Image 1: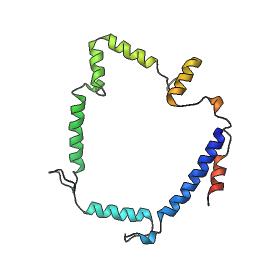
Image 2 (image 1 turned 180 degrees about the vertical axis):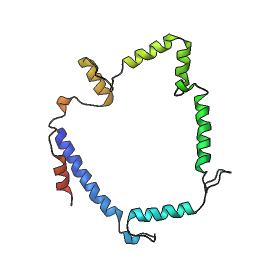
Image 3 (image 1 turned 90 degrees about the vertical axis):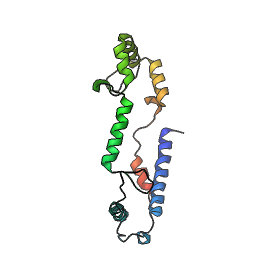
Image 4 (image 1 turned 45 degrees about the vertical axis):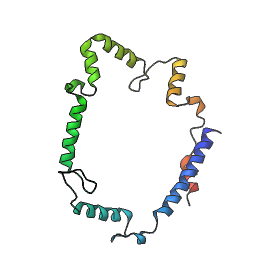
Length: 163
């Protein structure tokens, strides 16, 4: 099966899903909210009711309330400090990198060697055919020659499949 045939099948399936979503959205008149003008309006009404409920309690952990945003930020800051373990700002992503750099250049050399054996996306790179095949295999890609006709008008196929 060619790539074009597979994409055409996908587009037809997506169109059917669009039709199913329209059916599943249902009749707005059946909403139990006061504002039935749209799903967005009903959700906004629900949000306003939740905000008005005042279920914020910074003193205890419970399933019927929540912490305030400032309490949550404080807890996250504490967790971040525990995870970083006091790493300097220049190394605060991984304490292990800081330790490797402080132990000498052997760790840095190993890290640079590993980085230099990676496929780059920020600059051009010259790879052998074997390296290219391995890179494609690692990410589940195919060669440009295997893709097929890229000029198929899938929008037209999609629009033709809509009700």
